[in-house]
Amino acid sequence: MATISKLTAIGIMAVSFIAGFLSYYMLSNVSREDKKKHIGELISQLINFVIFMWVAKIILNFPGFLSDPLSVLAYPGDSSTFYLAVLITLFLLIYKKRQKKLDFLPFVDSFVHVFLIASFLYEFIEVIFQENMYAFGYLILLAILIGLYFFLWERMSGKLLLMVILCGWSLGMIVLAWILPFVTVFGYMMQPWFVGLFFVIILLFLLKERSA
Image: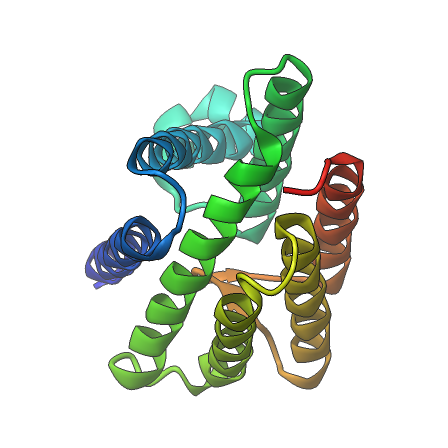
């Protein structure tokens, strides 16, 4: 049953991200070449993230890995593993930006689009088909953010729009974390301190970018 549940969660996540990529490809107003480039970069970073999840499991369970590596690698990653993988990914993106191997602002814009759509579909499936009512609050937050994103898309600069969405998501997640027993992103529990740290790191780099 645990294996089936894990495979179901992976399947829902895969379908959600495919929907996010399709939405970005169909609705984004950048050129087709740029769309393909951004989607390729997003897929590359998602693959990196999966690898970093494995690395994070090894780092956080290093004594157990030395004695029984298969038990550590086979065990599903928890929230701490997710946090560490996110931070490693952020540092990799920052490094690529400093090496001028990543156009940071367009990348974040494409990521936000895909993330919002994928997250909304994932939480919608959780609420409707998995009957997870704890996901309802996050579903409402995502619906509001998606509405804001598309409403403001051509009404403000790219950087300002991303800052609005980032602030809205971070504040909403912190509020939900305080009023609900727990709040999750793709099944991983979010703590206010992690949301705040993520917010500060991304905001600082957005502030350094020129307006799109």
